[in-house]
Image 1 (cartoon, rainbow, N blue to C red):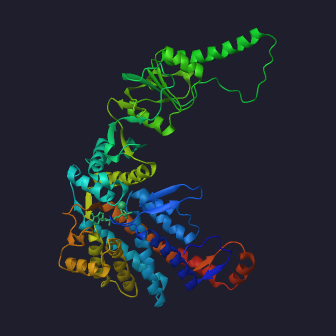
Image 2 (cartoon, protein in one colour):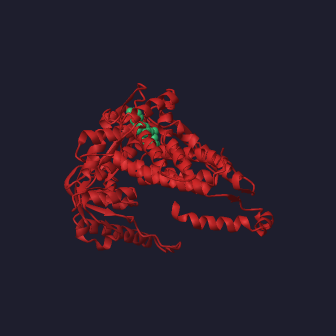
Image 3 (tube, rainbow, N blue to C red):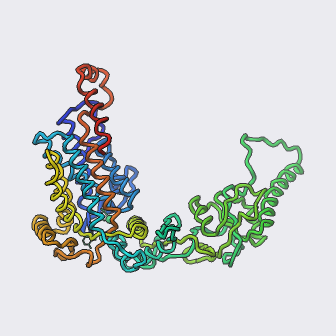
Length: 544
Ligand code: ADP
Ligand code: MG
């Protein structure tokens, strides 16, 4: 249920809770069918008519026009997961939805929300501890394993068809920007990996390039396009006559005066080009425009110039060429210039800019149409993040629901040690974890109950890595089967799903703006709602 443009009103206690829970669950329902390799895609049409076809949880939720505040809190779960881990957004949202569903059952049994919140919090902490115990430490140089991490993340996405090639490019890209810190840990800076897309060719022709790719033409046909060890100047100001702020009117009394005026403009441009030449630049990448006359002078000097280069490209070129960005052409510090080898592909109408010490790499993704490349880019983006996480963190988990079933088992055991009503909430948390294998089975057309029974039996039997092979329906050691996920993403999903569920459960009163000045005041005069909520919020802050 997604509520759009409600009139102002107020809801309290169970009404408020069940309203919130339904809204949050509706969001979770919306993405469930996309989970896993056999998940389906969604087609999202914006009010402008733009179409997005995707399987990516966070993209779906961001594109959906969600107008309900509680539902938006669940969307935030996906966004946090995307920011912190880069993958696992559907899992996090599905888990939040399931926690709330099971919480509602407890509330119906008159268990106070505080007990549920406390139980969820305890269970979530326990589950995260156990993630660390289940996780396998891997060698961050294990190329094959990193490839599997990338492939698992891309399975079922648009990127899947070429996942072998793409996984290699992704691992190579991450490796190219990994440096060892003083303490021996690996630091991956994905800012040095730029993902570019191009339509027209197949995804199998995607490639990893040292340096940057600039999808622009030279400003003049007579300019050189291939330059070895060229001095590179990056400019973020226009190479044009400075426009006056006010409209000036020119009073001319003779044709000579006009000529004089034009001459002086030409002179200014000539001076700018002189300054560029004097700096020793062989190539200029300009973020803004370049005047026609200046283009002509630059061509005459044999300097390659490219205009209206994207700001992000200029910044990336700075890394690639080891240059600084110049804003004032009258005062160019020779130190600001960098060095790079430039070559041009006439077929693709691109410049390749390769720096000396290869500070940055570009992953050039190709695909037949825009929809294809866009979804490819999302899949590859997730995979880059999980590989980077794995290289940095070194811990991975068996996928295909294996870790969730194992966590559920361990959290259930732990519940025995929890007293009071919280125990029921800890058990409910354990049940909620099983939403992942259940939905993976459902989405693969398997019987969810049979699958879960089989998985639980395997885990009771000590097979910690038993998960679902969604293609055969068998329970297998998913780690050996190459279905591996970074541990960090799972910890993040557990944390953010629990936080969101608890945030929703803490609300016992919804006051929508508008009519409140009348109805609301009366209610508040009665005391409990406002005061009660304030007290509750304060008391539970530490539990989140
Ligand atoms: P999310 O947005 O949560 O990453 P995905 O649609 O990417 O959602 O699905 C991730 C889930 O799919 C994980 O639980 C992962 O273990 C599982 N998965 C990925 N590949 C396989 C596979 N080959 N077999 C079984 N499960 C898989
Ligand atoms: Mg994923």
